[in-house]
Each structure stands twice: as C-alpha cells, then as structure tokens.
Length: 298
Image (cartoon, rainbow, N blue to C red; front, side):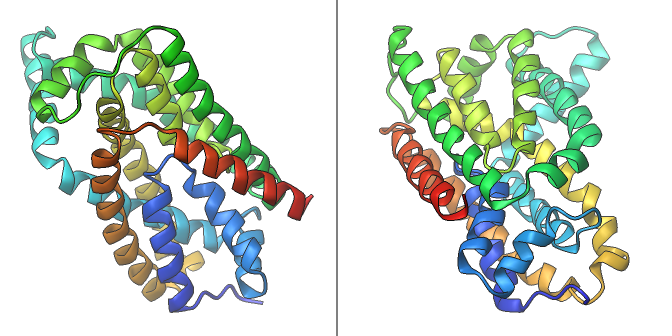
C-alpha cells in the first residue's frame, strides 16, 4: 500500500516539528509518540518511520529545512558576523575576535555531530524510532534536564540577569566555551539520534554547566543547531524529490510552512521565557509524558 499523508496531518506534524525541534522536548520523539497516541492512520505514520526506506521520515526530516530557515531568519545578523569571522580567521590564519572564535566553536561542534549522524542515523532509526523506545528516551530527556539544573546550582554558578544584547551574550559565550567543550558538545548532540532525546537539551545543559545563563545557553544551542538541522534537512531533500516523495510533495510544502511559522514563534518565546525562568517546566513535561507513554505502550 503506497504511503499517504493528508494535508491536515502534514500541517499538524509541521506545527509539532517547529515547536519541539527548538523546545527541549525532542522533535523526533514527538513525531513518533503523538501519531502513535492518536492511532488509526496517524499510528501508521509513526510505525513507518522505522522501516528501511521511509517516506514519512523523508517528510519529517524535510521539515528540518523550514525550521533551520526560521532560525537563520531570527539570527541572520549573527550569522553574517559568524561567517565573516570564519572567513577573516582563515585569511589571517589566527582566531582573535569574538565572532572568529564563535565560528570555530560552531565548526568544531558540527563536525562530530555530522559524522556520527551520517554513520548511524539509519541504524538508530530502525532500532529506536518506535513508541516505547521514544517514551523511554523522553523520560531520560526529562532526567537530563533536571540533572543539568541541579548540577548548575550545585556548582555555584549564579544566574546573571537576562536581557543583554546579542553582542554581549556572544562575548560571554565565546569566553566561557572552549574548543574542547565544543567538541564534547558536538558528540553529545548526536544523542538526538535517539527518538526522545532532544538536541536542544544536550546543548543547553552543556552551556549551563559551563556557566552560561539560561538565555545565553538557549542562544548558543540555537546557533549550534542551525547547521546540523539544515544539513539533516538538505540531506533528505533528494528523497522528497525522488520516488519516496511521490504524492506527498504538496503536503511537505504545507508542513514546511507550518514548521517555519511554529519555529519562529517557539524560538522567540523560548528566548524570552528563559530570561527569567529555568528548564524545569520542560523537565516535568518530559517525565510525565514519557512515563505515561511507557505505561501505555509497554
């Protein structure tokens, strides 16, 4: 039976993708769990994600392009500075300015995430893109959020007042995060291959443990995520243009528009929310939704 997805399903999944990719609650986990909870044709979408050649996965990962474009739009001024810093660091063969350093932190963090993703994405998807596995890893995601907040408080880091301008935040990020930290963050980003673990969680918690405040940690997480999300989406675009995309390209466009708008709203909200609050509400959500899903699908 050929794969089908309605426009309503495409738009709903696009909205979910746009929000959950940026909120620290795992977009891949929700793309498995929510259709499985809804049942019927929705559940068939979730189950199709773990097969060898998955049109649904091509559709979902294609939505990453829209999410990445939303982040590029929100942070375009920063990306101009970062790309300029990268070019000048190569031209002068030294790393001195804040944005030269930021550029290389992003490069260092992106390389291991990209290599591991290319090598193991298919294996992890076929093994773990299932409702029970996603529920277990979503629960672990909540524990990581709680653990990150606890370790940050225990380490004695104090929360700086939020609301600094972007340049001041970037100076603090570039000073707090070392090249070694960036390499480690690149490795832990790969945990997002497990449906239920959030890339945003892993990078935000790493930033918090390096002494960044919550607003700076989410900003750094979004900058790090942009090339990885964009690359993952572009990598799957040929699937959508090929046989796997037959009959669903219009739905993919509708879902992409929904994901773009949802990502804009989610990123704007999260940056403002974390100026005065912590990641604890997201931890509680992941633990509750994960635990209930384990009981339901176990």
